[in-house]
Image (cartoon, rainbow, N blue to C red):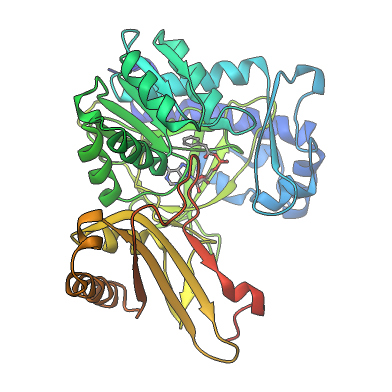
Length: 439
Ligand code: DLL
């Protein structure tokens, strides 16, 4: 079901005309109201009037995460604080969080794009939506909540934690849709199994998973263990939260709600725009947001845009699964590797579970080493040692073959790796202790 057919199935020409009008308005607005943008535009030698076509976007300066930090907490707002009805924040790994703000109209827009997202998975008012994204400053919980309410579905506002209770309520309430991070979905399936419950027998039929990278291998695991269709949903606080893009039932990339969020792909090194189909860094300009508009915000996420028509009828461009972040690429002895590549390879090995931890280290003065801890199923672990040794060799061989790096694989017993209720931590880079990598 398409939630807003007029917007989501508009012709590309209609869409482009509307985007240009809104872009011009937004650019003029930020120049007038936000000192940061006025200064950045002046420095780049561009004026709002220079935006005459969508192509002119490329002349505007980028906005980065560090600009949020430098203008912490409310320096990038384009409205008076009294117009702000909500604040969210995303926790950085260090220092101050990234703070974002919404007007009434922004909250309304957010509910609209989240209703579109859930409708991508055929959610209607008949559905019961179990929402295990964290409520609070994180955008996941309330983002999904408002979208589900907009549709008229029944929302169960669980947030993360108390996993056994979640499973009990999911069954008792007859939940049909599950919303949480993909790593938490796997955790729930395991916890259910320990309770002697097979969630495949429950009423769950669809899940909306995002907020962290996950691979097709992980999708297959989730679909198999929960007996559902698992859809990928994407978003980030700086742009709105979840609701930036969503997969439809075709599972062939996430439709970007382009009438509100204008995407570009750029070469992360040169900043030059790249054509459709090429992988690079995803950049967004918000066309309609009031409180905190962003111009050419560099997400750090790596993907490509796919303009080909989709069987679902939506005309909005699709983005491929996020393959990594510009800042999570590991360089191990000169070879570039993303954690998602390691996940893909591991999940192809029979007997390996979707729980892993990548530890990169460097002995003083020596070469980088990479060790991957990965859990194996109970049966294999309690089996004779020969089976374990074979599995370990097989995993190490596959990683060498597919990624060109030699890694030490350590097979660990079930439940050894810490479970996450939110975004999973997959990498520990101990080299940071010794300072930046030398050439
Ligand atoms: O994670 C918003 C969200 C909540 C999205 C719930 C989907 C579901 P932030 O905390 O600001 O916002 O983190 C944004 O998370 O730049 C990506 O690196 C990553 N991310 C989000 N969705 C996906 C996804 C929320 N589907 C950052 N695949 C983004 C891969 C994702 N990475």
